[in-house]
Amino acid sequence: MNFNFDFVNRRKWWYALSLLVIIPGLIAMALHLAQHRSILNFGIDFTGGNIIQVQFHQPVTSGQVRDVLDGLNLGKSSIQESGSNQFLIRTTELNEEQTNQVISTLQSKLGQLDLKRNEKVGGTIGRELTIRGVEAMVIAWILMIIYITIRFEFLSGLAAILALVHDVLVTIGFFALFRWEVDSTFIAAILTIIGYSINDTIVIFDRIRENMRLRKKETIEEIVNRSINQTLTRSINTVLTVIFALLALMLLGGETTRTFALAMLIGTISGCYSSIFTASPLWIDFRHMSRERHRQAAAVQTSTKARTRKATSH
Image (cartoon, rainbow, N blue to C red; front, side, top):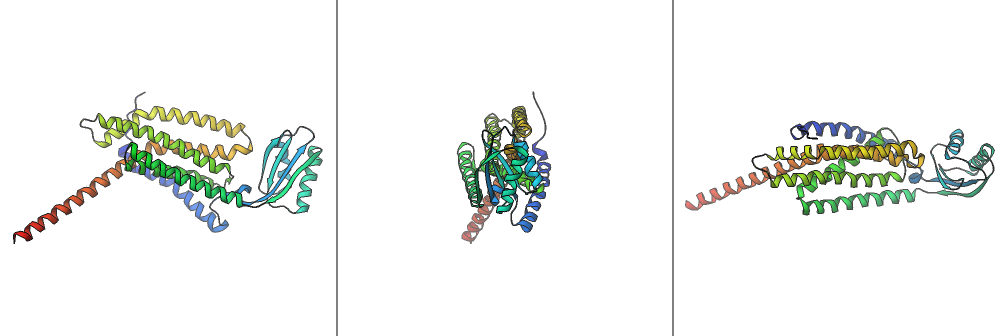
C-alpha cells in the first residue's frame, strides 16, 4: 500500500502534540514529588513492607486471595502464585496483630493453610533496582548513539535518543498522572520500550539512507517524507501485532503482569509515534541548524580574512 502523507512539513504540529502529552505528566511528577517525595506511586517492591507466604490445603485462586485482602483494607498489596496453591503476599508494613488477622481471615474464608514465611522487608532492593535500571538505560542510550553514529551519523543518533527520551517521559507521565502503582516490572517495561522504539527508528533511518543515495533533485524534506511513507505499512502492522498481544496479556495475564503490560502498551504506541513523527523530523532540524552554523562560521572566517587583507594592503 502506497501512502503520500506530508509528515515532515507538519512537524511543528507533531512537536506540539508531544509537548501536550509530556507536560501534564511532568507537572504530575512534580506535584507527586512535592507531596510524597517521589515522582511515582511506588509499590511495595520499592517502599518495603511485609512478605507473607502461605500454602492452602485445597485449591485456591489468586482472585479469591485478593478478595479477602481487599476486605481487610490493608492498603497496597500484591499477590503472586509461587507454587501449587501457594501464594506470596506483599503488603504494607504490618504489626504482629495485623499479620495474625490476615492469616486467621484467610484461613476462615479460604480453608486450612500453612504459613511458610512471614518477614518484614525494606525498600532497599527497590531503590537499588531503580538505580540499576537508570544506569542500564543511560548505558543503552550511549551505546545506541555510538552505533547509529557509526552506521549513519551523529545527528541521527541524537535525534533517535531524543525520540527514546520522549517515549520514556510519555510512559512515566501517564503513570504519574493517573497515580497507577509502579512495581519492579515497570523497570523491565521501560528498558523493553527503548529496544522496541529504536528498532522502528533504525528502519526509517535506513530507508532514508537508501533514498539519499538515489536522490536526484529532491530536497531533504522530500526524501524523508518519502522514506516514512514507504515504511509506514510496516510500522503500523508491527505495532498492531504487539498491541494485540499486550491487550491479551492485560486482560488474561493476571495482576502480576498488569503493570508491565500497561507500561508496554503506552510505550509501544508512543514508540511508533516517535519513530514516525519525531525522530526523522528532528534529524532534519538538526541538519539545518548544523548547516546554518557552518555557514555563519564560514561567513565570519571570510570576513576576518577580508579585513586582514585590507589591513595588510594599507
